[in-house]
Length: 300
Image (cartoon, rainbow, N blue to C red; front, side, top):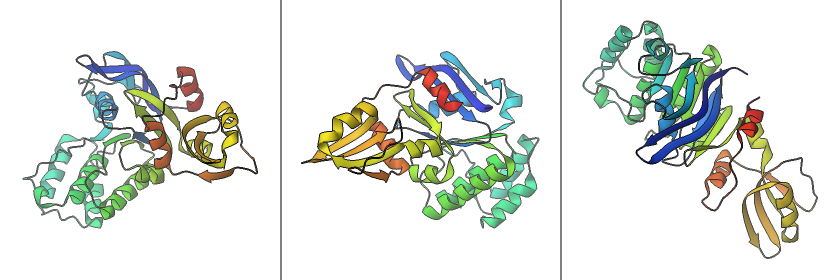
């Protein structure tokens, strides 16, 4: 499998605190990959390392086959990046932003930019500062897409925007992935949006990769089991228990199945992506980290 982004033993620290350490991960080429984790997990640091805005203290990171860095100008031209702050010039008109984009990017697609904004009902005459939060988010995405990037990195693109704007933004991303084959990495707290958008998932916790997997496989092997409490120890011995609740004679267990499960005494229910991610991020969850070989097995 070809990787659009690959990190090996990646580490970055600020003073004595490690924001990322011993990170091995990969974003498959052509995939839409979700990057999830609590605040401080290292998501933004990973994005900045990928863009060459930060330098690793340990390990390496490659994007589109190249080592990133401030002097990798040819690589940067192949990437689209939207930071959390959405750095737009608020005093500019939308037309001014397009002019700036055209002058700064050799592969700029003006026709795509204009037609996309027209479809989104964003006037070229409007001042950027007068646009709603959702419109500014869509303008930022359009500015990145008009570069015709091979890879798109989005840091919290759904933050502070209304449901209609999230729907439009998600639609744009899906259209881009389908029509252009662009590799997309999305960091977001809006886990429900990722479940409907992504086909690959990376979970960060305390600066390390907790889990990396294909989305369909990830969803299929995590289940809620409801059954007799007396069988709990047997379940825990065979499968990875992420969360467990007991009431009288009944147990409710969030598990990662290590093998197919069928037992008439137990009810098996699907879980949402949000349920699963929150189970992994539960402070009570002390499951061991995956080894590098296990992550490589998942990736292959």
